[in-house]
Image (cartoon, rainbow over all chains, first blue to last red; front, side):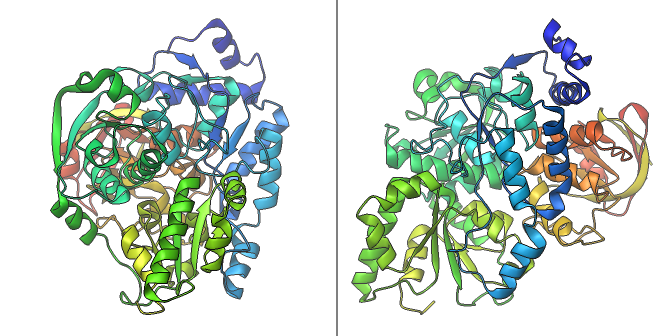
Length: 425
Length: 147
């Protein structure tokens, strides 16, 4: 890698030993991918993946403290993934004990570190930092040092920003030095599609199921998706963006996709069309049968596979304002149709604190609360990240949550049916 | 015994027993329970990985195509190394992915006293040849012996 004089001086220790190690980390990281240079970060804000004060992650907090003690913090403020705890979300005595006394004992300490490191504000805890209400929305072409797989794939694909699938810690280190290694999804070549995915379904494919199928097939490659505009349109409106948010999160968690192109819809696909497809790209055809096959192959590892669900999470990644409104309409009308008043399964809808704040100002808020649904800023994944939840029959329409926990995946319509059916499974 | 040549991502030499996955290794899903709840054997907790689910990863030669999943992957690997609950080495058939590279580099630069050699680009033939329980030796210059 060829460094500028300034970068080389930092590597040689001109700004102290810790800063030199931060630079060394980025150089080694870039060299693993043949990066020949470091390029400046151009986004207003950064986004970090590590939001949780897990006792077992103490090496991370020690490293952050080393950075703070050395005074090498970034000038760039950041948002961060959702908090792992919220008292509004149902938890029994034992769960609360485990959460507060064993697992997240470092939460307050770590949040204090985040403030010192440059947290945007006290509400900047969400995986969907790019929502208008949150305010961390990069511009097309911006170079980022973000982590959080669902946010990175959204920023690259829907917003046209440029970011590699950085890991936690690497995210903040790039921001500290102000540069990231130039490779992969930062380059024109790395943004070319090596898969053509043809969507040939007879009905609108479930976003999180389609994303899962594609993620599992293409892994870390870039897919160029044809035929989806038939179902979600050619305009990046609220509905299409929410669909792509959920679709992308599934591609990134069920595989390792960092960028996708949707023909006639996402910015680079609109601009460059099939020029984005690399020579020799492979093909994957998705029809309804393929989606059914993918869903049927998900392992169900509940102790009793037919157990009645005890909790339902909707909103991983966090919901948009429009999605909160849509779920309110759907739950309300389905309850009414069945002659029921409240959901029969404790159901938690999650969104960014700032999105919830906006939602609470609408008439939908009272209507949703009347159905018994809980709204929260929590990270469902972090909530379920304990042995007690392993035994708990939790259902979700999030393929990311399914991947990392024992939650069972259902399509959105199935979830709606289950939570409104008056207690029958 | 068969020899394969890869590229050194982080250096070191080691001999260990192989555990093999043909599908992507989800670092968060694989390590989170083991790290969090003190599983001394560091058993793989990724329910989607039928090759590795329930098998010990500690001090094993982890043979894999790539890692997948959450971008906490690198810091999870870093923590596994800092807590000395890491595989003996990681041997990738494909070029390394950004999350695994981050974990390997973070461990190499910031963790004292732990060496986890990481070799990538060993090729499909490597992953087809190596089987669970085989003895794997990582030598200098990216040479991997399987026997």
